[in-house]
Every structure is written in C-alpha cells, then in structure tokens.
Length: 392
Picture: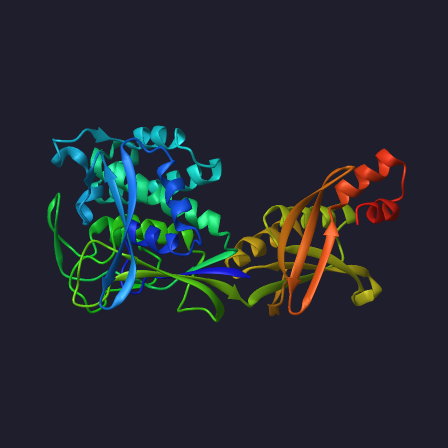
C-alpha cells in the first residue's frame, strides 16, 4: 500500500510541510510551475536549496506582492492589530479559494483546513468563526501554504498518510496579542487529541497552519511504519535552532493491516442483509460480503463480514449494529498483501478500452474493464470472450 509518512518530530509549519512534499516529485520544476499556476492573487512560489545541521533540504519561499510573511504565530491571529493590511474573514477566504485553479476536491481540502484554524481561533478569542478576522498578508500566505500542501498530497496518491507525534517546542513567543506561551493557544487547541510533545528546543516549532495540515491530512499517528522507502524529502523553515527543525516526508510501500469484522445473524431478510452490505460499501469499506451458515436450532443464517482499515473501525461497527440485528461483533486483525494497481486506456479500432493492471510479488496481470468489453460485444454482436480476444 502506498504510504506517506510525515515526520514532524522536530516541528512543522505550512511552508516546511509543502517543501518536504515538493521534494518527493521527480519533476520538481513542473510541480513548482503548477503551484504558481494556482492563481492565488499576488502569490509567487520559489524554492531555495538550504543546508541546516549538515542536512540538505528545500525551503519554499511564498511571497505576496513581493513580501514574505515572517514565521510565527502572529500570521494567523485577528487582524485588528495589523492596521496596515485589510481584514479578511472566512467568507473572503472561501471566495478566494473558489476562484483558484485547483480540482474541486482540493478546494474543499483547503477550506476544511482553514476551518480548523478559524475554529481554533474563534474558541481562543471567545467568538464565532464568522467573526474572526485575519490580516491580508497572513491570510494569503496561509492559503498558499495550505493549497500547495493539499494539492501535492493529492497528487502523490498515497492510500494512507501517517504522521509522527508533533513536536511543539516550549517557552514564549511574541505574537500579535503580546507574549504568549508555546505552543500558541490556537495551535494547542488544534493539537487537541493529537499526540504531541514539547521536545528539547526552546521556541515555536509548530505553527497553527502546520498543526492544522497535519490534523487534516494524517489518518493515523505513530512512529515510522515498516515500509519500503521510495523517496525522502526534507522541508526547511525560516528559523534556525540549536538542533535541526525540519519536516521529513517519506513515500513508500507498507504491508497493509486490515480489520475483519464478523457477526452471525439468522433473523434478517435477504433484502435487509443486502442493504446492510450496500451501506457498508457505500461508507468506504474495502469489502463486505456474507457467507451462508447453519446456526443453533438448525436455523439457516449468514456470517456478515466487513473488511476495513483501522481508522474506519468505529464507523463500520456503528453501521453494522445499525443495519443488522446482531448483538455482537467479532474483530480479527489480518495482514493483507495487495498488488499495485493502475489503470491505462488503450485505443482500439472499437474505441478506447480501460485496462486494469496489477503487479507485484513476482506476478503481473491485466484485465479489460467489463463495461468496455460489454459495449464492444453488443456493438459487434460478439460474446464477451470474443470481444476480449478482439482487443488483445
């Protein structure tokens, strides 16, 4: 399973995370050009190769009308302390995001991440998200960081994103609202329910933008998973510390652990069993099915089986209890081996045909998409096997 591991054990900011992801692309210049084509008003992205503590990485410079926002918690606090800039609210930010040259799912990602930040700021300041205002430079800088990170995370195509516990740093930092503890109040609230620790470096190592991105993108948190590493990227920030503070992004293949949920039922109609399986699949279960069994008192029944990832467990358990009559569910952890899968389109005299290609563990197989084969069979008055032979 393609897995992206975000090592934020020495800190994280939006530009650091984006720079680390950028290093994972084979053609970094092409991706950088794509970032500059997003169309954020006044924003330009440039990169710089830097070395910190003998480690070489990338710093992603984000400038708004030629000005680069300085690192620190002040970039996301309320704008009434920054009279030199216009004040922006969440509606203004959503309007900007809607106009960007991004896929719709990435636009939604950006808005969701910003909602995490605005929600935390609202709680800290005792107001609502709609009444939180951000100064313009900080807003555009954050939108740029979030847009870059969300786009590249999608483009990398990882099936699962894992993050390490977040290092926050400690001490105090001068922000727009005065001297505040580290992590800043909004950052601390964003990190609620996430594993985090102060570490050994005095200073702000985790910004609100960095915390919100990790919270939104990561599906689980742990130390580095066992994986076959394919690519490693280092994202450097603006600040220098006595020890290295960088985001390390690792892309590779992991063995997949999957959860098998089972329950026995003997008092459901076939329609109800079918509906339950349909709902589990609709919710995103990798697979769901039933097996005919004989139960006590010689009653015919079924074992309903649902396969799911660990982060889906609670949702699937609730759905099984909701849509079946069972009063108990069994759980088994399974190690799952899967072939790498990709899809290609082959042009044929009978029109385009989608090919599903699977490979790995010394095996390789290719299968034409059923709907395309069926179309050819009907149009050419052939059997399905004859249509399959026709496109070989």
